[in-house]
Image 1: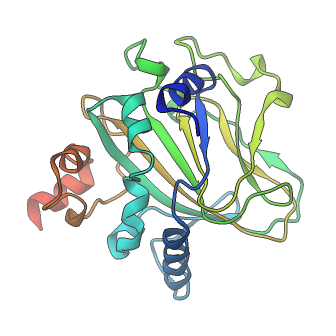
Image 2: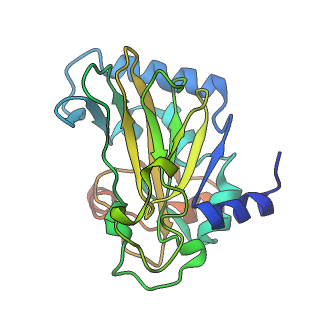
Length: 250
């Protein structure tokens, strides 16, 4: 297995890393069981996107402790801290289900936050915010994939999509438990293919405590940091507005 130094060098060049077995099989099974339980009954926390092709829930941390390992994954923290530094903090958590699909393939390429061009130039690894996509189901040539344009976030100048050859895109396959760590300012997309299989993922975002929160979606429950070690407390120490509201009044 490559050293952290070698992995960070690869990330520096291409803006993403693929880490097999980032989540243990027992954790993936428990997370999938929680999703199965949560989608049985009508639930206002599940919303649909892309004309109903995607189901999304940003609040599963509230009810399911088995999700905790995916918000601060022990196997990935040395890499995430290597990219963002010791002031790394939690930003967002979501569970997504891409449903079976029979239409024309599509790939909605985008940079999150437009690449955050309004942020100070030259952060380490050209990364203001990093994201991790965990595969909860096996992903291969017969399923939807998570896809990236390598190197498309690794500069202060962020060219438009027209400046890239989409044939250079990497459509990432991997067994369940695989994680894709990527610069959230690079071009990435859900690559939707005709498939009779759903693809489940968890997506998290991390940033720096010195920067603004990336969103106001996920409510982080107190159990994630109360009574935990200093590094864990620091990771959750800069809450978004909705989490701070609940901390202050409930």
